Image (cartoon, rainbow, N blue to C red):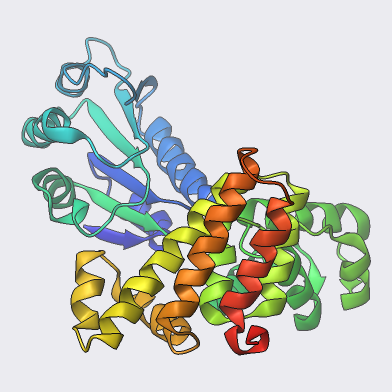
Length: 339
């Protein structure tokens, strides 16, 4: 049974299940969902907690041994399986399916995984979990959903903040829900239940925008120069390794090169998407960026990335971050750099 994160509280209250799987790449929502299940499990007498971490040469036989064991005492067992990659492999998949078929009433299992892709959701182990228990996907919040979440959090905290103030807070934390909660706590400590103006928030809230290479590439796809410059400055301030940034940028440029080549040869762009496993929601971003430049342009930017990589390795003189910035700006506005 699939649920949204906001449906979980009512679900654990009304219908307790033997298995819960919480997957995704948004840490706060995942932490809170798992904590909610743990709390309810304790209330129901699952007081013995066993934690398994799938890493290296993990012994998968531990999982059925724990999940099928019956409690000899009054306390029942809460078993947590941490699966960061969301890829259990052949042995792990078989063990999970086996466990789903032979669950003991004395145990409840929580599977905590990274983001599940489409192929993972078509596997036998995923379907077995979904048939027997509850699957909760947590996704990063954006746009109106993020503003709604922030508004509800502020109200729950007892803060009186107008919409403009929340929008400033939204801009500062930019998707980092952990930072948002911390800032709300800080605002309450400073102002209490008094009404907080937009100016108060602007002066009180630190810039905790969640800068990462994916926000950088998203900005490039949109051609948003201001956003790209802001994120890139954040990455440099955080001293993120230049090769990591180059990897992300080059990956997108090679995709644009492949699409541009297909277009120039009247080949199927959709086939290129399929070969590179591009999701439907990502396609519009690539097509938007593709319309801005030619095949020669994307190839030139890939060469610039190679030059920046050589600089990082000491094989060429220069400043790799200057080259990276130029590549990003040229990707956003190709015509502005035409000679």
